[in-house]
Image (cartoon, rainbow, N blue to C red; front, side, top):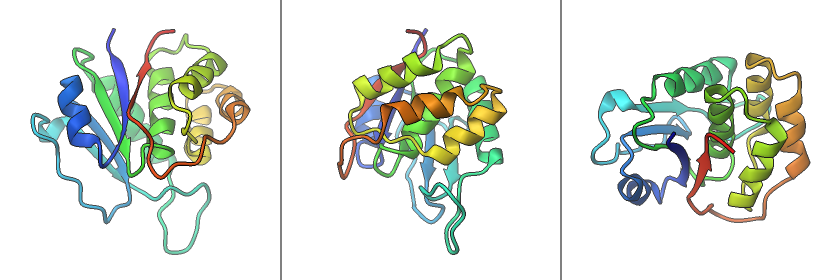
Length: 171
């Protein structure tokens, strides 16, 4: 089975190239222009425009249940012959939440806490978006286990941008 790769916007082209990825999930502010990396067809690039916030705020777009549905549906269409790159602006919050959600939706036998600990081990700066995790926990009927697992790893180390990392679909 292949894997997920989490990246920042700045590292996106190099990450896609180095992993030979053909599928990309973009989670970024709706007004941010993102050029589709070379080698990625339009149908294999999902752009979801929302801000990195954990509750509604005037002037900002928060993650919604529909966004989570879109993430899960995109993951279910992914052929898994090549890695899938998930990115946001910094590669720290929205993208790490989406990768965690995708891994659990693709492989429902994964243990939430074990995956969260693996996420922390591979990405010391990861701080998965709590609203996305809560929405996905409900959608995937995980009974609060996703929320508790992410809460247990705490906030990641402070950084302007995360370093690209691989999140496996099996532990």
